[in-house]
Length: 320
Length: 320
Image (cartoon, rainbow over all chains, first blue to last red; front, side):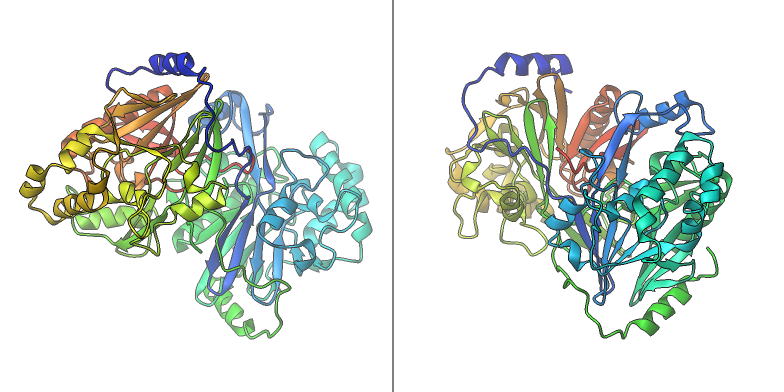
């Protein structure tokens, strides 16, 4: 590329960096708002950033693949720094015209600073917490339920009906199952569901797969990641799409390689079967999908490539 | 996927769509602001959406590939509706601390409504036009220069020094070359440069490849797309990246298939050589790049795959 080398560029910039003048505008020092809107028929959907966690990849993050192979794939996809993994978290808000529905709630205020941004993203999108009519939880993992509560343990969405996947509630709220948990991840999950949800017993609405939780939003059985994990089909007029929730964790790993098993899957083999069934369907139907752990704004289509899949992100549009 | 078919979902939703209640929040009816920030060393960069054009793909959009093959690739990548192509336009703003620099200016106010959004995106990012210290033009095509002017023909960035690639200026402002132009695309380009730039003669600063146009921002010769087309290496401290401008048009076509020639290339063979040289370099160096016609926010890395390339978009971060 002409006579320029990377080294020359850096040296040149360093030599000139002492310039004392100031730009006409100061550095802004903050990111754009963490939301993105799109239409589906008459519905208006908003992706909401709760944040993203970057962390040293645990040895068994991909339970059935050697760590160095997983890290090589992370590097090939520029996911994070050396040895690291990065997982984003993004609930979706659906305004059906009749109901303002939030699917999953993020990590809540007690973990930050890199997560727990849902309230700020909602505010940036012009929504107040008491405008949410319905909160639908896909499964009872902390990054999906903890945002139900405020810092002081109150209800984050005080006027909302809270809908819980019955099979997941039964599993994670069972004292018998909690007593049997013997690995640290599951023990933490059981402790968390008790801490966050115990005082909601009797105050939530249970749903099962097949239930139209809100007019136009139908729960789908995508068990495996957790015993009662659900996804959602959303339909308005002639348009439809799928909210996959945690059918996969980060797509560069688990959508591109559906046979890779993430540490967080409760039944990894069932999760893989669910994943293949789900992506076979959306690839065949050319459906729009949205993934909770996909790169923001989380929208894409899926192409089947041999026994694997390719995610084709939807390009951000600056018009609704 | 359980007992649900797409048809059942749509029918179910239609049956229930008559619900008279209203959601607690009205539809917002507008998109999130069209900007995205990121840091590079001490610099703060902002991608700015000027909009995107969706249009019936001209027969020769890919000059050396059959139309049906190109449209099949568009469909495989969910680029737009059947028979269509979609091209986004996104200038980049660089605050070096010493200068607030805008590279390229979008379509301006006279084409809309799907383009010409740069002023709105700038305003959303908290920048007023008179804060821009320097405008650097990569090449003299309409989607890069027309935003230099307001609707009434005034200067859109009244206090900015305007920097022009000398070789492109010489080519496109030459009456001799204009007289020789015999195809509609080039005739339109020559007419446009005269309309937009004639009154700026003598009021702009010329630069050539290798020139550090602003401290930390160095022009690179990437001729081919136009005779004087330039890209930019940006460096701050130990960090660097490349602003590719129009080394390729939409990446799903011309980065994935560097041997495909877009209709807008002035010298298609030179443009292909430049493309391969540029992407070989950034793939080898694992450089961050930003593309004017890439899906917003336009950032990515490049992997070499055989004789072709793969774009790996950078995931949107909700923190700076």
